[in-house]
Each structure stands twice: as C-alpha cells, then as structure tokens.
Image (tube, rainbow, N blue to C red; front, side, top):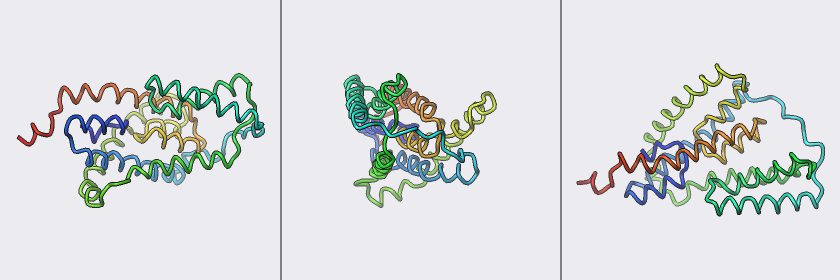
Length: 233
C-alpha cells in the first residue's frame, strides 16, 4: 500500500519506518515512478505535439535589483510562515504565493533573469535525482518489476480521469496531463514551467493530491496494514 501510494514520499517513508515496513523497497518503487514520469512525460508531449509549441507572452522586463530583493525577502518570509504551519512543500508554495501577490498587485514589474530560472530548474532536477542516494544497486534491481507495475497502475488510473476531464471541460489537454500525472509535485511544476503549461492549474492539482495522500494514508494503513513482524509470524 505504501509503495503504491501516489506521492508524498517523505510522509510515506516516515510512516513506513513507524510500521516496520520495507523502507528501501518503498523508496525504490516511489522513486522509479517519479523518475520515469519526469524523463518520459516531456518527451511524450513533445513527440505527440500536445505541448504548446510556443511560450506565452514574455515578461516585458527583468525586475529592478530592489524589486528582486523585495521579491526574495517576501518569498522567504511567506515560505517560513507556511513551514511553521506544517504546510506541504512550504518553500515552493510560499515563494509562489508571495510572487503572485506582488506581481498581481503591481507592486513588482518584471520577472527573474533567465539565468536564475535556469539555475532553479537545474536545482530541482538535481534534487529529484538525489533520491537515488545511498540506494544499493541490488536493492534497486530487486524491485524493478514492482516499480514498473506500480507505475503502470498509476498511469492507467490517471488516464481514466484525464480522459474524463478532457471530455467534460475545455482545459488544454497538455495542462490536464501534467496536472493529473502521478509524479512529484516539484518535478511536475518544473515540467509545467519548462513546457509552457499553466503552473497554477498544475500546482493546485498536485497540492490537492499531496494533502489528500498525507491525510488519508496513515488512517488507511492503520485500518488495513499490518506491522512487518505480524506478517513474518
């Protein structure tokens, strides 16, 4: 159950340790799903022509140094407040909220320099890849089949809802695919920004999934899961 949970890896890992589950196996299965999606999804969208072919209207100018300093300060402050309140992905969503408010109210005009966006995307990619840290090759190979199976099930379930939403709404198909992809929240937001997909739409869906999984999974495991020692007995 924990290996097949759609996201919230940090919370799932903590829960697995508390329940005496195989933490290494769960981490492998969860990480494989994220890595496959992160690598394959942009290739699929580009190959099929689903992703937007042109970026949205570019920001008129780069924000002034004082505006950038204010943006950074506000982003850090909101992120810290969210972190104190145990809000999921507080650093990312805190910065997003602060930036949205400052730009939406016209207090700041212009965006980040291109090189800053590039550094941020490289950092997210490095963070995703670091999930394989301290993972033995034997452990990884022994759970490849389980990882691929879990990925296939997650994609099949996601595809059902993607089809339903695409038929019932006028939202762009590329937005729906990335919003419903069962991948890591940071990875999917990075893909949205890179592929010129609506980051607010994608972020709202993945945040909802993250919160729902974090709240419901402990109760489900408590009701139906058994500690490892009970299974061995």
